[in-house]
Amino acid sequence: MISEWLLKETNQRRLKENMPEVAVIPTSAIEPHNLHLPIGQDFMHTGYIVEQSAKIAWDRTKKVIALPGIPYGVDCNLLDFPIAIHVSQDVLNAMLREVIWSLRSYGIRKIVIVNGHGGNDFTPFIRQIQSNIDVYIFQMDWWKVGDDKYFDVFEKPEDHAGEMETSVGLALYPHLVEMEYAKDGKAREFRIKALQKGWAGTSRDFSKLNDHCATADPYAGTAEKGEKYLNIVIERIAEFLTDLANEPVDDIFPYKE
Image 1 (cartoon, one colour):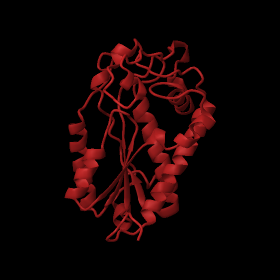
Image 2 (cartoon, one colour):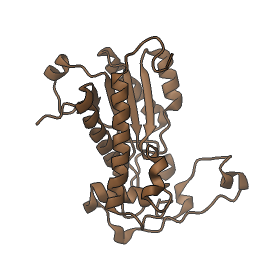
Image 3 (tube, helix red, strand yellow):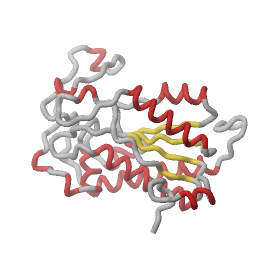
Image 4 (cartoon, helix red, strand yellow):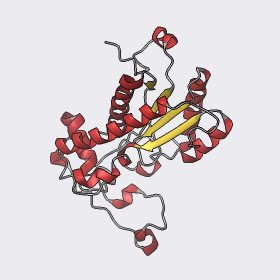
């Protein structure tokens, strides 16, 4: 059975009969996650979330399509660990710009970036491209979609390779999660008060934080928690895609009167 909501599986005959109104682009990273999670963690779980959300929205509207994801992200601060693949934000922006131009040539003007890596930042890019092209770009970091429900599911806060990411890995690809090798994720703190409080910031060099490229405790992770949080996130993203697909583009879209 062909999944018509996936660009990689559908064909031009179907697209000529029914061109989608919303295109969804997953972005992520290839990077180390503690010693127990796969290098492709971000790429795999972001792709899964996008495909499942797009399926629900497609079933409701027949107007949504998910594109293949961009696997690489901004990882220059993880290169001391094997094997992180780094591409600059400029390169990511350039690739997205060409993808968006291609989509616009087919009349697709509503485009959603679902991001799965904290090092990627598309806000300035979106501001600029919406000034240059008559498209509407929306973005979200998928792990933040369920923030208000986070502690209904998990015990410990997430940062990198902690309880939430471990739970998602156990839910989606348990054969790739080697919990017996997981380290505790304890990381060095900043020595300057403003950085500790969070009102001043900087880029973190992960090799100075600890020896295992993790900044959160993974030990309470379970497949059940991962499945529960994924369900929350997927349904919310699907609802957004459905609403976006059903809204007409007019002079003040996406704003109210």
